Length: 483
Image 1 (cartoon, rainbow, N blue to C red):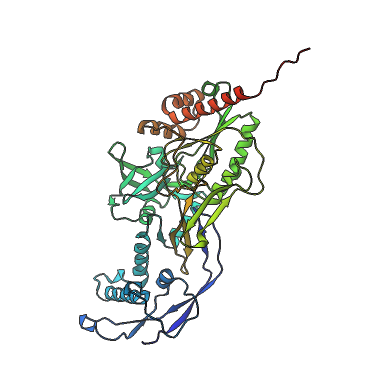
Image 2 (cartoon, helix red, strand yellow; image 1 turned 90 degrees about the vertical axis):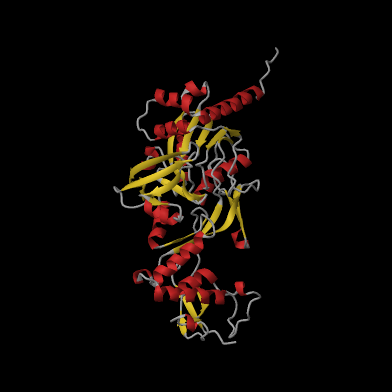
Protein backbone atom coordinates (compact mmCIF):
# COMPACT_ATOMS: atom_id res chain seq x y z
CA UNK A 1 0.00 0.00 0.00
CA UNK A 2 1.26 3.46 -0.85
CA UNK A 3 1.78 5.64 2.20
CA UNK A 4 -0.47 8.62 2.89
CA UNK A 5 1.13 11.98 3.48
CA UNK A 6 -0.18 14.09 6.36
CA UNK A 7 -0.33 17.71 7.23
CA UNK A 8 -1.72 19.57 10.24
CA UNK A 9 -4.42 22.13 9.69
CA UNK A 10 -4.79 24.58 12.56
CA UNK A 11 -8.33 25.75 13.09
CA UNK A 12 -7.65 29.28 14.27
CA UNK A 13 -10.31 31.11 16.24
CA UNK A 14 -13.00 28.63 15.31
CA UNK A 15 -15.83 29.06 17.74
CA UNK A 16 -17.97 26.02 18.36
CA UNK A 17 -21.37 27.35 19.24
CA UNK A 18 -23.51 24.77 20.84
CA UNK A 19 -26.95 26.03 20.10
CA UNK A 20 -29.93 24.32 21.67
CA UNK A 21 -32.32 26.72 20.03
CA UNK A 22 -29.51 29.24 20.39
CA UNK A 23 -27.90 28.36 23.74
CA UNK A 24 -24.17 29.02 23.38
CA UNK A 25 -21.03 27.32 24.68
CA UNK A 26 -17.50 27.75 23.35
CA UNK A 27 -14.79 25.21 22.62
CA UNK A 28 -11.07 25.95 22.46
CA UNK A 29 -8.90 25.96 19.37
CA UNK A 30 -8.37 22.44 18.03
CA UNK A 31 -5.66 20.99 15.80
CA UNK A 32 -7.01 18.80 13.03
CA UNK A 33 -4.84 16.18 11.32
CA UNK A 34 -5.94 15.51 7.76
CA UNK A 35 -4.55 13.38 4.92
CA UNK A 36 -3.43 14.86 1.65
CA UNK A 37 -5.43 13.25 -1.08
CA UNK A 38 -3.62 12.21 -4.23
CA UNK A 39 -5.86 13.07 -7.12
CA UNK A 40 -5.83 11.91 -10.70
CA UNK A 41 -5.61 14.64 -13.34
CA UNK A 42 -8.52 14.00 -15.65
CA UNK A 43 -8.10 15.00 -19.25
CA UNK A 44 -10.42 12.39 -20.73
CA UNK A 45 -11.99 9.00 -20.22
CA UNK A 46 -8.77 7.24 -21.25
CA UNK A 47 -7.09 8.53 -18.06
CA UNK A 48 -9.28 6.48 -15.73
CA UNK A 49 -6.77 3.72 -15.24
CA UNK A 50 -3.76 5.92 -14.69
CA UNK A 51 -2.15 6.34 -11.29
CA UNK A 52 -2.99 9.35 -9.17
CA UNK A 53 -0.63 12.17 -10.06
CA UNK A 54 -1.95 15.37 -8.68
CA UNK A 55 -2.37 16.47 -5.05
CA UNK A 56 -5.53 18.40 -4.29
CA UNK A 57 -6.03 19.68 -0.77
CA UNK A 58 -9.59 20.41 0.30
CA UNK A 59 -9.28 21.25 4.01
CA UNK A 60 -12.68 22.84 4.52
CA UNK A 61 -14.73 19.92 3.24
CA UNK A 62 -12.47 17.45 4.96
CA UNK A 63 -13.11 19.25 8.27
CA UNK A 64 -16.83 18.88 7.81
CA UNK A 65 -16.79 15.26 6.68
CA UNK A 66 -14.18 13.76 8.99
CA UNK A 67 -13.78 15.98 12.06
CA UNK A 68 -10.77 15.34 14.24
CA UNK A 69 -8.99 12.07 13.62
CA UNK A 70 -8.32 10.54 17.03
CA UNK A 71 -5.18 8.84 18.14
CA UNK A 72 -1.67 8.80 16.78
CA UNK A 73 -1.34 8.89 13.01
CA UNK A 74 0.23 5.82 11.48
CA UNK A 75 2.24 5.76 8.26
CA UNK A 76 -0.25 3.34 6.72
CA UNK A 77 -4.01 3.09 7.14
CA UNK A 78 -5.71 -0.29 7.21
CA UNK A 79 -8.60 -0.61 4.73
CA UNK A 80 -12.08 -0.59 6.22
CA UNK A 81 -14.43 -3.54 6.01
CA UNK A 82 -16.49 -2.13 3.13
CA UNK A 83 -15.75 0.33 0.37
CA UNK A 84 -18.74 2.49 1.38
CA UNK A 85 -17.20 3.02 4.82
CA UNK A 86 -13.89 4.15 3.36
CA UNK A 87 -13.88 7.92 3.74
CA UNK A 88 -10.66 8.32 1.78
CA UNK A 89 -11.93 6.55 -1.33
CA UNK A 90 -15.21 8.46 -1.17
CA UNK A 91 -13.31 11.74 -0.91
CA UNK A 92 -11.25 10.72 -3.94
CA UNK A 93 -14.49 10.17 -5.88
CA UNK A 94 -15.71 13.59 -4.80
CA UNK A 95 -12.42 15.18 -5.84
CA UNK A 96 -12.64 13.53 -9.27
CA UNK A 97 -16.16 14.89 -9.77
CA UNK A 98 -14.99 18.33 -8.64
CA UNK A 99 -12.16 18.38 -11.17
CA UNK A 100 -14.39 17.11 -13.98
CA UNK A 101 -16.80 19.98 -13.36
CA UNK A 102 -14.00 22.54 -13.14
CA UNK A 103 -12.48 21.26 -16.38
CA UNK A 104 -15.50 20.84 -18.64
CA UNK A 105 -18.57 22.65 -17.25
CA UNK A 106 -19.86 25.17 -19.79
CA UNK A 107 -19.91 28.27 -17.49
CA UNK A 108 -16.43 28.70 -16.07
CA UNK A 109 -17.53 31.49 -13.71
CA UNK A 110 -19.57 28.92 -11.75
CA UNK A 111 -16.70 26.50 -11.17
CA UNK A 112 -14.52 28.09 -8.52
CA UNK A 113 -13.51 25.77 -5.68
CA UNK A 114 -15.34 28.05 -3.22
CA UNK A 115 -18.66 27.91 -5.08
CA UNK A 116 -18.55 24.18 -5.77
CA UNK A 117 -17.53 23.17 -2.24
CA UNK A 118 -20.14 25.51 -0.72
CA UNK A 119 -22.81 23.98 -2.94
CA UNK A 120 -21.69 20.49 -1.94
CA UNK A 121 -21.92 21.36 1.75
CA UNK A 122 -25.38 22.86 1.26
CA UNK A 123 -26.57 19.65 -0.33
CA UNK A 124 -24.88 17.48 2.29
CA UNK A 125 -26.42 19.30 5.26
CA UNK A 126 -29.89 19.74 3.75
CA UNK A 127 -30.07 16.00 2.99
CA UNK A 128 -29.94 15.19 6.72
CA UNK A 129 -33.13 16.83 8.00
CA UNK A 130 -35.06 20.12 7.60
CA UNK A 131 -33.13 21.81 10.42
CA UNK A 132 -29.55 21.05 9.32
CA UNK A 133 -27.93 23.54 6.98
CA UNK A 134 -24.78 25.21 5.70
CA UNK A 135 -24.55 28.96 6.31
CA UNK A 136 -22.24 31.31 4.45
CA UNK A 137 -20.72 34.14 6.53
CA UNK A 138 -23.67 36.48 5.85
CA UNK A 139 -26.20 33.81 6.82
CA UNK A 140 -24.29 33.11 10.03
CA UNK A 141 -24.30 36.80 10.97
CA UNK A 142 -28.05 36.94 10.27
CA UNK A 143 -28.59 34.00 12.62
CA UNK A 144 -26.71 35.80 15.37
CA UNK A 145 -28.82 38.92 14.78
CA UNK A 146 -31.96 36.82 15.36
CA UNK A 147 -30.95 36.13 18.95
CA UNK A 148 -30.56 39.86 19.53
CA UNK A 149 -34.20 40.51 18.50
CA UNK A 150 -33.34 42.71 15.53
CA UNK A 151 -33.12 42.01 11.77
CA UNK A 152 -34.53 43.08 8.38
CA UNK A 153 -37.26 41.02 6.76
CA UNK A 154 -40.97 40.23 6.69
CA UNK A 155 -41.34 38.78 10.20
CA UNK A 156 -41.99 35.20 9.06
CA UNK A 157 -40.56 32.24 10.94
CA UNK A 158 -40.30 29.35 8.45
CA UNK A 159 -39.39 25.67 8.53
CA UNK A 160 -39.40 22.92 5.90
CA UNK A 161 -42.50 20.73 6.01
CA UNK A 162 -43.52 18.24 3.33
CA UNK A 163 -40.76 19.61 1.11
CA UNK A 164 -41.98 23.23 1.15
CA UNK A 165 -41.04 26.28 3.24
CA UNK A 166 -43.89 26.52 5.73
CA UNK A 167 -44.84 29.39 8.00
CA UNK A 168 -44.31 28.48 11.65
CA UNK A 169 -45.58 31.87 12.70
CA UNK A 170 -45.89 35.42 11.51
CA UNK A 171 -44.46 37.49 14.36
CA UNK A 172 -46.48 40.33 15.83
CA UNK A 173 -46.15 43.88 14.56
CA UNK A 174 -44.41 42.73 11.38
CA UNK A 175 -45.41 43.06 7.70
CA UNK A 176 -46.38 39.37 7.52
CA UNK A 177 -48.68 39.49 10.55
CA UNK A 178 -50.32 42.72 9.40
CA UNK A 179 -51.02 41.16 6.00
CA UNK A 180 -52.81 38.20 7.61
CA UNK A 181 -50.33 35.38 6.91
CA UNK A 182 -51.11 32.44 9.21
CA UNK A 183 -49.25 29.52 10.77
CA UNK A 184 -49.23 26.53 8.44
CA UNK A 185 -49.32 28.56 5.22
CA UNK A 186 -47.07 26.91 2.63
CA UNK A 187 -44.88 29.16 0.46
CA UNK A 188 -45.21 28.09 -3.18
CA UNK A 189 -43.35 30.96 -4.87
CA UNK A 190 -41.17 33.88 -3.80
CA UNK A 191 -40.88 36.70 -6.33
CA UNK A 192 -42.17 34.29 -8.97
CA UNK A 193 -39.55 31.62 -8.20
CA UNK A 194 -40.87 28.18 -7.27
CA UNK A 195 -39.83 26.92 -3.84
CA UNK A 196 -40.27 23.28 -4.82
CA UNK A 197 -36.50 22.67 -4.99
CA UNK A 198 -35.41 25.54 -2.78
CA UNK A 199 -33.67 24.68 0.48
CA UNK A 200 -34.54 26.42 3.73
CA UNK A 201 -31.59 28.80 3.83
CA UNK A 202 -32.15 29.91 0.23
CA UNK A 203 -35.79 30.68 1.06
CA UNK A 204 -34.76 32.67 4.13
CA UNK A 205 -32.20 34.62 2.11
CA UNK A 206 -34.86 35.67 -0.42
CA UNK A 207 -37.34 36.62 2.30
CA UNK A 208 -34.76 38.78 4.05
CA UNK A 209 -33.02 41.79 2.62
CA UNK A 210 -32.82 45.56 2.80
CA UNK A 211 -35.66 47.34 4.55
CA UNK A 212 -38.09 48.97 2.11
CA UNK A 213 -37.78 46.40 -0.69
CA UNK A 214 -40.93 44.54 -1.75
CA UNK A 215 -41.38 40.77 -1.84
CA UNK A 216 -44.15 38.89 -3.68
CA UNK A 217 -45.36 35.67 -2.05
CA UNK A 218 -47.69 32.94 -3.32
CA UNK A 219 -49.05 30.89 -0.42
CA UNK A 220 -51.21 27.81 -0.10
CA UNK A 221 -53.44 27.67 2.97
CA UNK A 222 -53.97 23.93 3.61
CA UNK A 223 -56.96 24.42 5.92
CA UNK A 224 -59.03 26.03 3.15
CA UNK A 225 -57.06 24.95 0.01
CA UNK A 226 -56.85 28.63 -0.96
CA UNK A 227 -53.93 30.03 -2.94
CA UNK A 228 -53.19 33.60 -1.89
CA UNK A 229 -50.94 36.29 -3.34
CA UNK A 230 -49.22 38.83 -1.07
CA UNK A 231 -46.96 41.79 -1.79
CA UNK A 232 -45.07 42.73 1.37
CA UNK A 233 -42.48 45.39 2.10
CA UNK A 234 -39.46 44.43 4.17
CA UNK A 235 -38.92 46.33 7.40
CA UNK A 236 -36.53 46.33 10.32
CA UNK A 237 -37.96 43.75 12.70
CA UNK A 238 -37.61 44.54 16.40
CA UNK A 239 -39.04 41.84 18.60
CA UNK A 240 -40.43 42.84 21.97
CA UNK A 241 -40.44 39.69 24.08
CA UNK A 242 -43.36 40.40 26.41
CA UNK A 243 -46.55 42.16 25.36
CA UNK A 244 -50.14 42.73 26.38
CA UNK A 245 -49.70 42.46 30.14
CA UNK A 246 -52.92 43.46 31.91
CA UNK A 247 -55.74 42.26 34.13
CA UNK A 248 -58.59 40.94 32.01
CA UNK A 249 -61.89 42.85 32.31
CA UNK A 250 -64.31 41.70 35.00
CA UNK A 251 -66.93 41.22 32.28
CA UNK A 252 -64.94 38.12 31.31
CA UNK A 253 -63.51 37.00 34.66
CA UNK A 254 -66.29 37.82 37.11
CA UNK A 255 -65.10 38.44 40.69
CA UNK A 256 -61.61 37.04 40.00
CA UNK A 257 -58.53 39.01 39.00
CA UNK A 258 -56.98 37.07 36.13
CA UNK A 259 -53.81 38.45 34.59
CA UNK A 260 -52.81 38.03 30.97
CA UNK A 261 -49.55 38.41 29.05
CA UNK A 262 -48.04 36.87 25.96
CA UNK A 263 -44.50 35.93 25.04
CA UNK A 264 -43.58 36.73 21.44
CA UNK A 265 -40.19 34.99 21.34
CA UNK A 266 -37.48 33.72 23.71
CA UNK A 267 -34.56 36.14 23.50
CA UNK A 268 -31.86 37.38 25.87
CA UNK A 269 -34.04 39.85 27.82
CA UNK A 270 -37.23 37.73 27.89
CA UNK A 271 -36.99 36.33 31.42
CA UNK A 272 -36.23 39.75 32.94
CA UNK A 273 -39.07 41.40 31.01
CA UNK A 274 -41.44 38.62 32.10
CA UNK A 275 -40.43 39.00 35.76
CA UNK A 276 -41.18 42.73 35.69
CA UNK A 277 -44.55 42.16 34.02
CA UNK A 278 -45.56 39.57 36.64
CA UNK A 279 -44.47 41.94 39.43
CA UNK A 280 -46.74 44.65 37.99
CA UNK A 281 -49.69 42.25 37.74
CA UNK A 282 -49.18 41.05 41.31
CA UNK A 283 -49.21 44.66 42.54
CA UNK A 284 -52.64 44.96 40.89
CA UNK A 285 -53.91 41.99 42.91
CA UNK A 286 -53.60 39.22 40.29
CA UNK A 287 -55.02 35.89 41.49
CA UNK A 288 -54.36 33.75 38.37
CA UNK A 289 -52.43 34.09 35.12
CA UNK A 290 -52.94 33.25 31.43
CA UNK A 291 -49.61 32.98 29.60
CA UNK A 292 -50.14 33.18 25.84
CA UNK A 293 -47.57 31.21 23.80
CA UNK A 294 -49.59 31.08 20.58
CA UNK A 295 -47.47 31.73 17.48
CA UNK A 296 -44.30 31.88 19.58
CA UNK A 297 -41.57 30.31 17.37
CA UNK A 298 -39.09 29.73 20.21
CA UNK A 299 -35.60 31.19 20.47
CA UNK A 300 -32.87 30.77 23.07
CA UNK A 301 -32.95 27.58 25.13
CA UNK A 302 -31.52 29.29 28.21
CA UNK A 303 -34.24 31.92 27.98
CA UNK A 304 -36.96 29.24 27.88
CA UNK A 305 -35.46 27.55 30.95
CA UNK A 306 -35.30 30.89 32.78
CA UNK A 307 -38.96 31.54 31.94
CA UNK A 308 -39.85 28.19 33.53
CA UNK A 309 -37.90 29.34 36.57
CA UNK A 310 -40.43 32.14 37.10
CA UNK A 311 -43.07 29.52 37.97
CA UNK A 312 -41.19 26.48 39.30
CA UNK A 313 -39.04 25.81 42.39
CA UNK A 314 -35.25 26.16 42.16
CA UNK A 315 -33.24 23.28 40.63
CA UNK A 316 -36.28 21.79 38.89
CA UNK A 317 -35.48 19.85 35.70
CA UNK A 318 -37.56 21.24 32.85
CA UNK A 319 -36.08 19.60 29.75
CA UNK A 320 -33.39 17.11 28.76
CA UNK A 321 -31.60 16.25 25.54
CA UNK A 322 -30.37 12.91 24.27
CA UNK A 323 -28.26 12.15 21.21
CA UNK A 324 -25.91 9.49 19.82
CA UNK A 325 -22.98 10.40 22.04
CA UNK A 326 -22.85 10.96 25.81
CA UNK A 327 -21.78 14.59 25.35
CA UNK A 328 -25.22 15.35 23.90
CA UNK A 329 -27.06 14.12 27.00
CA UNK A 330 -27.92 17.09 29.19
CA UNK A 331 -30.46 18.01 31.84
CA UNK A 332 -31.56 21.65 32.01
CA UNK A 333 -32.92 22.90 35.33
CA UNK A 334 -34.17 26.14 36.76
CA UNK A 335 -31.72 28.36 38.59
CA UNK A 336 -30.68 27.54 42.13
CA UNK A 337 -31.72 31.07 43.09
CA UNK A 338 -35.14 32.30 42.06
CA UNK A 339 -37.59 34.95 43.11
CA UNK A 340 -40.30 33.49 45.38
CA UNK A 341 -43.81 33.86 43.97
CA UNK A 342 -47.27 32.68 45.04
CA UNK A 343 -48.38 29.41 43.47
CA UNK A 344 -51.22 31.11 41.59
CA UNK A 345 -53.29 29.06 39.09
CA UNK A 346 -51.99 29.21 35.51
CA UNK A 347 -53.22 28.44 32.01
CA UNK A 348 -51.04 28.35 28.88
CA UNK A 349 -52.44 29.06 25.43
CA UNK A 350 -50.75 27.10 22.62
CA UNK A 351 -51.37 26.40 18.94
CA UNK A 352 -49.64 25.04 15.83
CA UNK A 353 -47.45 28.14 15.75
CA UNK A 354 -45.99 27.41 19.20
CA UNK A 355 -42.59 25.86 18.53
CA UNK A 356 -39.23 24.99 20.01
CA UNK A 357 -38.66 27.06 23.17
CA UNK A 358 -42.42 27.59 23.52
CA UNK A 359 -42.86 23.81 23.46
CA UNK A 360 -40.19 23.36 26.14
CA UNK A 361 -42.07 25.74 28.46
CA UNK A 362 -45.44 24.19 27.64
CA UNK A 363 -44.19 20.63 28.10
CA UNK A 364 -42.48 21.40 31.40
CA UNK A 365 -45.35 23.29 33.00
CA UNK A 366 -47.82 20.64 31.82
CA UNK A 367 -45.78 17.62 32.98
CA UNK A 368 -44.98 19.22 36.34
CA UNK A 369 -48.66 20.12 36.78
CA UNK A 370 -47.94 23.78 37.18
CA UNK A 371 -50.32 24.91 34.43
CA UNK A 372 -53.17 23.66 32.29
CA UNK A 373 -52.63 23.80 28.51
CA UNK A 374 -55.45 25.09 26.35
CA UNK A 375 -55.55 25.19 22.55
CA UNK A 376 -54.07 22.97 19.83
CA UNK A 377 -51.12 20.59 19.51
CA UNK A 378 -47.89 22.53 19.07
CA UNK A 379 -45.61 22.52 15.99
CA UNK A 380 -43.24 19.71 17.01
CA UNK A 381 -39.82 21.34 16.58
CA UNK A 382 -37.84 19.73 19.37
CA UNK A 383 -34.34 18.97 18.14
CA UNK A 384 -30.94 20.34 19.17
CA UNK A 385 -28.70 21.89 16.54
CA UNK A 386 -24.96 22.39 17.01
CA UNK A 387 -23.44 25.26 15.06
CA UNK A 388 -19.76 25.03 14.14
CA UNK A 389 -18.16 28.14 12.69
CA UNK A 390 -15.59 27.41 9.99
CA UNK A 391 -12.34 29.31 9.33
CA UNK A 392 -13.80 31.49 6.55
CA UNK A 393 -16.68 32.74 8.72
CA UNK A 394 -19.24 30.30 7.34
CA UNK A 395 -20.84 27.70 9.59
CA UNK A 396 -22.50 24.30 9.59
CA UNK A 397 -25.56 23.56 11.68
CA UNK A 398 -26.64 19.98 12.24
CA UNK A 399 -28.96 18.09 14.55
CA UNK A 400 -27.24 16.27 17.41
CA UNK A 401 -30.02 15.48 19.89
CA UNK A 402 -33.73 15.66 20.64
CA UNK A 403 -35.62 17.39 23.45
CA UNK A 404 -37.50 15.39 26.07
CA UNK A 405 -40.05 16.83 28.48
CA UNK A 406 -39.81 15.94 32.20
CA UNK A 407 -42.08 12.92 31.60
CA UNK A 408 -39.74 11.77 28.77
CA UNK A 409 -42.09 12.75 25.95
CA UNK A 410 -40.35 13.49 22.63
CA UNK A 411 -41.24 16.93 21.26
CA UNK A 412 -39.71 16.50 17.78
CA UNK A 413 -42.39 15.57 15.25
CA UNK A 414 -45.03 15.11 17.95
CA UNK A 415 -45.49 18.49 19.57
CA UNK A 416 -47.09 19.00 22.97
CA UNK A 417 -50.77 18.12 23.28
CA UNK A 418 -53.00 20.45 25.34
CA UNK A 419 -55.05 19.35 28.34
CA UNK A 420 -58.07 21.11 26.84
CA UNK A 421 -58.32 20.99 23.04
CA UNK A 422 -59.88 24.05 21.48
CA UNK A 423 -59.54 24.75 17.75
CA UNK A 424 -59.91 28.03 15.90
CA UNK A 425 -61.13 28.73 12.38
CA UNK A 426 -59.07 30.71 9.85
CA UNK A 427 -61.51 33.60 10.29
CA UNK A 428 -61.01 33.60 14.05
CA UNK A 429 -57.21 33.51 13.64
CA UNK A 430 -57.32 36.48 11.25
CA UNK A 431 -59.42 38.43 13.73
CA UNK A 432 -56.93 37.64 16.50
CA UNK A 433 -54.01 38.75 14.29
CA UNK A 434 -55.82 41.96 13.46
CA UNK A 435 -56.44 42.65 17.14
CA UNK A 436 -52.77 42.11 18.03
CA UNK A 437 -51.50 44.31 15.21
CA UNK A 438 -53.84 47.22 15.79
CA UNK A 439 -52.73 49.92 18.20
CA UNK A 440 -54.97 51.71 20.73
CA UNK A 441 -57.81 49.17 20.69
CA UNK A 442 -60.72 50.18 22.93
CA UNK A 443 -61.36 47.90 25.89
CA UNK A 444 -64.94 47.20 24.83
CA UNK A 445 -63.81 46.27 21.31
CA UNK A 446 -61.15 43.92 22.65
CA UNK A 447 -63.65 42.26 25.00
CA UNK A 448 -66.09 41.79 22.13
CA UNK A 449 -63.43 40.17 19.92
CA UNK A 450 -62.41 37.79 22.73
CA UNK A 451 -66.05 36.80 23.26
CA UNK A 452 -66.76 36.17 19.59
CA UNK A 453 -63.39 35.23 18.04
CA UNK A 454 -61.12 33.73 20.71
CA UNK A 455 -62.62 30.49 22.08
CA UNK A 456 -59.21 29.41 23.42
CA UNK A 457 -59.00 32.44 25.70
CA UNK A 458 -62.56 31.88 26.91
CA UNK A 459 -61.86 28.24 27.78
CA UNK A 460 -58.69 29.24 29.65
CA UNK A 461 -60.64 31.83 31.66
CA UNK A 462 -63.33 29.26 32.49
CA UNK A 463 -60.71 26.70 33.56
CA UNK A 464 -59.03 29.15 35.94
CA UNK A 465 -62.36 30.32 37.35
CA UNK A 466 -63.26 26.70 38.03
CA UNK A 467 -59.98 26.08 39.85
CA UNK A 468 -60.43 29.17 42.03
CA UNK A 469 -64.09 28.40 42.81
CA UNK A 470 -63.12 24.86 43.83
CA UNK A 471 -60.28 26.19 45.99
CA UNK A 472 -62.66 28.54 47.78
CA UNK A 473 -65.18 25.79 48.45
CA UNK A 474 -62.50 23.36 49.62
CA UNK A 475 -60.86 25.81 52.02
CA UNK A 476 -61.44 24.98 55.71
CA UNK A 477 -64.06 27.17 57.31
CA UNK A 478 -63.72 28.56 60.79
CA UNK A 479 -66.35 27.25 63.16
CA UNK A 480 -68.27 29.60 65.45
CA UNK A 481 -67.01 29.52 69.01
CA UNK A 482 -69.75 28.65 71.51
CA UNK A 483 -69.85 30.71 74.63
